[in-house]
Image (tube, rainbow, N blue to C red):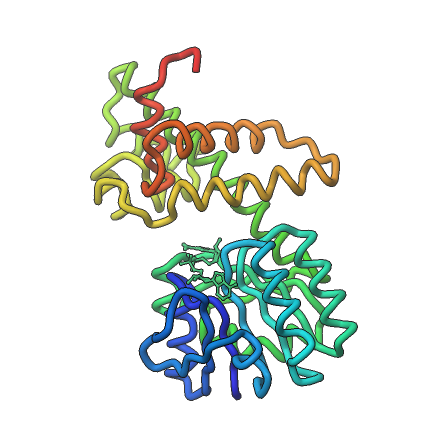
Length: 291
Ligand code: NAD
């Protein structure tokens, strides 16, 4: 296949590289980059897509995605496939799907979980919204870049799955950090706390796989001075998307709202910028009870 790839940053570049390794021809475009090893780079988004059978976008947010979609939809081949892997708001995904449909182009929203390591090793999980036909057409590409692709339903449901998953992640990470902070005050050894909780009803991915306490459990960013992993600002972005969707659809998410506030405070008024999201533990340790 000829694949146009737009947005070759931390995630996009390794994903595109895996497509090249699998034998596809990739034409890349990124506003900030002129060269990416093994990818043929071009100077405009339109040039990257005009001969492509499939195009993939991996961009920072919905506003950028909408502007790129406006540039590429009119010049893409009819019947081509547009896979957006960025994490964006539900409304942008739905509206671009409608626009693509008007141009005779198949569109799927396919945000990912698995981070930079998953992108490099081709082990991402894709959450996919779109028609059965589009999902089937896109599946061989998901198989190259990932280990699993779940067809979640109609357009937008991939983004819905992503923001719901990450709202759970943000809330459980904070709960796990709070529990360590309280355990410290009560004189409960952190290792003992892990041994109990990781095999009891308080277990979660945050505790068992990504423990926020250094040198406890499997290796995690906490063991590397909270170098991300998954950064606090990306968690804040996803929590804000969850709250935007909850507000627009009148869904009660009191803990999601509180988690958004806590990550906002951590990133914007404390020292959370550039740290892993599990650094909520040292942040909480510095907070007073009434914060
Ligand atoms: P990034 O900032 O490293 O990459 C985004 C790239 O898009 C940059 O290289 C930027 O120059 C380019 N870009 C911006 N505007 C553009 C435009 N108009 N045209 C072409 N290129 C443009 O970000 P990333 O970490 O690769 O994340 C990409 C997406 O994946 C985001 O939506 C993010 O939320 C999501 N995501 C990231 C992770 C992660 O761990 N990094 C995990 C899951 C999902």
